Image (cartoon, rainbow, N blue to C red; front, top):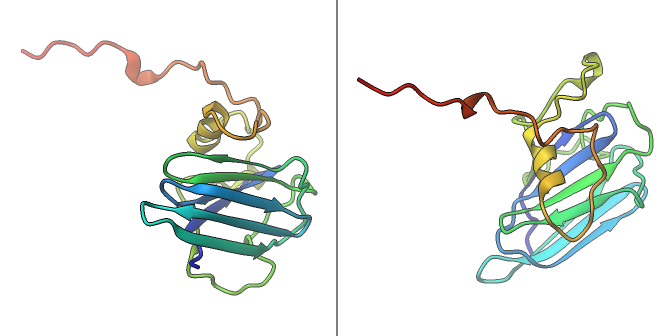
Length: 156
């Protein structure tokens, strides 16, 4: 049994964890108030992955969700106490070699009052089909116009 590689980031009301397991099967996610468990079979060789995390703070296990894709399992943990930053995912300060911070999605939200500009990862989670429905996260607008949709001038 191997732990699945994972990356995480913090938001005002949620903590996001992405387990990077391709072609996962038999996915089990266990949300508890102060603990989080994940297991699955992954890849063409059906390697058994299992992770257990003692969380930094409590979560609302009834409002926490997950979604499976072909490339990963995305988990959205609803914080029991909204608006409180998590400096790390785990209760203990120990370094876990399978866990890293998702710096591409990290945002210093404590000083930022404009939560309408939610990142691509959360929008992707909202628009994906999956096993559980995720909450509408900060009203992310899926119909905003892209700046790259304009016609390019012809080359001479």
